[in-house]
Length: 457
Image 1 (cartoon, rainbow, N blue to C red):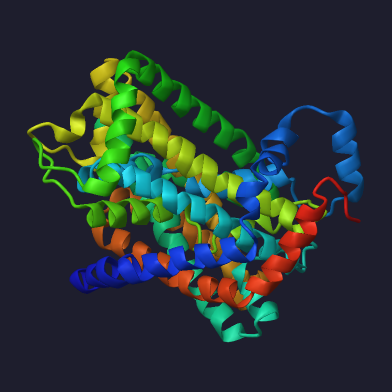
Image 2 (cartoon, rainbow, N blue to C red):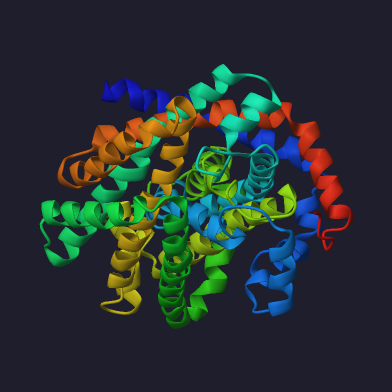
């Protein structure tokens, strides 16, 4: 079973066919929207980071015209909690070790197209959202697939894949990474970690999207800032090596990397494949998961929340992944005679420059994993709710919380591959809907960018 799943993942779902489909979708959407995200990048920053600057008049004006369950930043934080995670550390290390420094360039390219894709799917999610029995806004691919293209059976498939994925990439895989980090660093028993993590997660999850978003609103900025400052301290020590690191990234992106030390070398095409796949995997653009969180946001226009989706990819891949990549490349670790396992590469890279600083990675991994657990719970819950209604939520909570404990205490090699499988399957209905709804995306985008400063009631 494991061999079959791995073959499907490597050759199809996360191989060239899927990569071509996602990148082609990004190009089509970029053309349809006239590259609005890039031409109006200052607007993207203004209505994302710019809104976090204290401004009482702006807050009161927005509050009077907005409608939603949570704030735009809380929605973005919840989505970032799911995407800013182990992929920013282990995923980057894997990309460099397999594809060389040039893989990072292709990770950037995938992120640029990913910004367009996530802007589009978040915009559609808000445009087609509804209120559930509890009076909360709900949305996501299942709603714009059903109401936008009239294919409810496809929406049902998306939700089935989403539910299954939540138990893999959302709970068990993350709790396994978390317990492994704490065991390796401090010798903490994995069962203890699993039990504590399950209890802490339960305390957050039973509060629904409002509590999840409030925790994410605090946790995401803290864990991101903690990791970024630690990484910048390391890069300051290696300041003289940074120009050479960028030179390696750009040079090797088009020439490949020759074998050196423990690195076996790679061609340009292989670097392109590895970098693109790792980029997509870490920012989740095209999977359809993040739009579920963004649908709850208070906003006066679907595209305004879509800007947060674009920013999410920019922050996750262009900023966070680049910082990790520079730490690893400037350390020289990736080309040492003995290859280092990806899950330890970033930690050791920190330690090489500042002894003891590897604990920054350990703490970061723990926080990232816990954030992903609570965010992916919400994705799975909304998928379950779409399939069976609110009555299923309590049962889903119980199973999800139990899977957190179980994942921390057992070998989940097969679960990793299964999670990748259903993540890939989630993307197929979502990408089909994005392509079919491209005219709608274009219409909403053009309407918004004509006058993004206007508050629409």
